[in-house]
Length: 367
Ligand SMILES: [Zn+2]
Image (cartoon, rainbow, N blue to C red; front, side, top):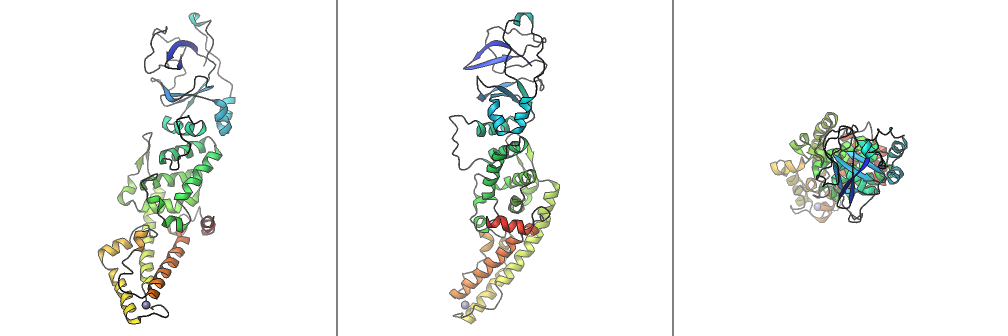
């Protein structure tokens, strides 16, 4: 693993090259190519490797290799965050290969190399969190989905528990157990979450065993229509989609949601009129009109919105047919009570009761 230090100044960086016997190209103080070659026996990928532009500290104490990129960073910082890295760095280094005679008096490169199977894009996100550069603001209120996903996936893999907790807490603000927060529609902003990323959130919830994320993440998946089967492409080019199990849950939940929406609308607009109704005859007719309106294709489509808690699903033309204030309030109250009752049932409706019972869901909604 020891390397002989070669010439190689590129900008402010020092580059190293393997002292492999197979090396055939001249390695004097010439200009290095843009891509640094690591031809030695320890080159697992076998291809050309590039020093990462962002994370190459000259005095770094470990070189992480991910894909074809090398990151020279600090062992102690990674070990502070991750017991997995800490253990990894404690492993004895493999014996150094014998140096060729011309290199014999060169000092051995003290910087060990660790090959990781992670995508370099993911690793860079973790490094930005654990050892931020001065040009990276830590005060980003809306981290990208990709940053969150990488932090959670690699944070889980390397047991960076605090990071995972921070990331999960952030996601729970969006994929919330709190109906009032859900109705605020945060998740429908374009940033930081496109709806399709709910598929990734379902997968993260499964990976991290965070079931409170599942009901609303799956509910959002149900709003994707045909796109639910397509998934999306992660930053590193990996395609992400729902597992067949979760796809099946969405399919089954879609029917339950439609059924519940019909019952809800029929119940909300049913007689009688409110106690103390100012115009009983007119209000009865208004309720009948609202029920009749459910037959209109546009209203029926709205009613069938998979997210029965969204503001769109709640606006069924009620309030435009001349009811008295008492009946208007009665219908709103009925609607809120029924929707809240359905919200409590969401783990059952979404088919995740095996991992999240309604008590745990209620508890999460009270937090
Ligand atoms: Zn009335």
